[in-house]
Amino acid sequence: MPRSAAGLSPRSKPIAIPMSEPASVLGKQIERYLAALAREDASLHSLRAYAADLGHFLEYLSPPGLQPPEPAALDVLILREWLASLYRDNLSAVTIRRKLAAVRGLCRFMLREGIITVNIARLVRTPKAPKKLPDVPSAEQVNALIDGVGADSLERPHPARDRAIFELLYGCGLRISELAGLCLRDIDRSEGWLRVRGKGRKERQVPLPGKAAESLRRYLAERPAPAPSRSGAAPNDQAVFLNHHRGRLTDRGIRGIVKFYATMLTGDSSIHPHSFRHAYATHLLADGADLRAIQELLGHARLSTTQKYTQVSLTDLMAVYDKAHPKA
Image (cartoon, rainbow, N blue to C red; front, side, top):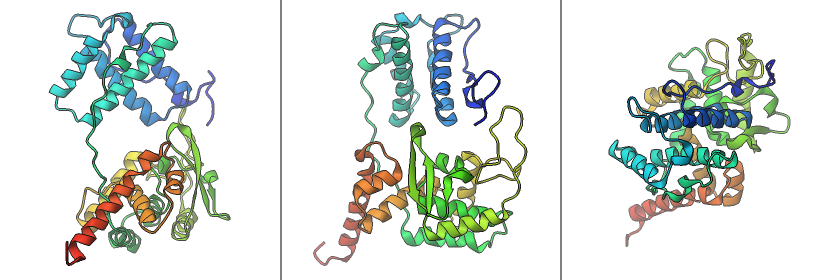
């Protein structure tokens, strides 16, 4: 990624957060924390999420006409009152956990910088999130959808690109951000590998299966020349997937493409890009793949994250048993 005159990448630009004027001490610490995350090359998606969550936290602590407390004045009672307000707003446990994680990260930063002496956010209990098994389409459903995309019955403007998107989502188990960030230099077609940049900028290699490789070859053969980059923007010349402006296709763009085809071809608008990652892992496990191998393919830091797919497989097995066994 090219560097600006100041030596920072475009992602290093400060993320705007809502705050009162003049900026409070806490507001300035939030700005410094976001800038530090940008320097550490956190993903743009993560930066936006942290900026939004910390902006809301600052807004809660800044009633009309008043400044938020100094960082050193934050205590457990204030955080518990803030969490109670999130529950009153009927936010899900998953959302509350995410917002609390953002505040904990801010407190870790301020502790490291000597602004506070205790990370009081660690003293607040994390809400338990319900263990919900992901909805996983069957292999037949996935293949029927991908074949429908390839048939081009909807007369879309970029059928080869769209087919390649679906083939890579299912054939490689990529996250939507990983697919959007894929570059031409990451593709090793001779050896059949993809270099993938996952969460925390960790890189891994995943096999490129035959159907995905073939659909990718067809798309790249007709891929248009990328548009020149605007000032300060990342270059488009290495982006694998381009939008109708010939710029890099974004997460939002991919999500819209998947939803369109899923709705038009199957009538199921609940199918999203991550559905194919779930299907990838579940179908590999059902066909006998080792759990730790699946962990490596998915780029999970902890095996416990991958183990949820064993629960999905067991649920499927019980459904088959209940339907087929005479003593069920």
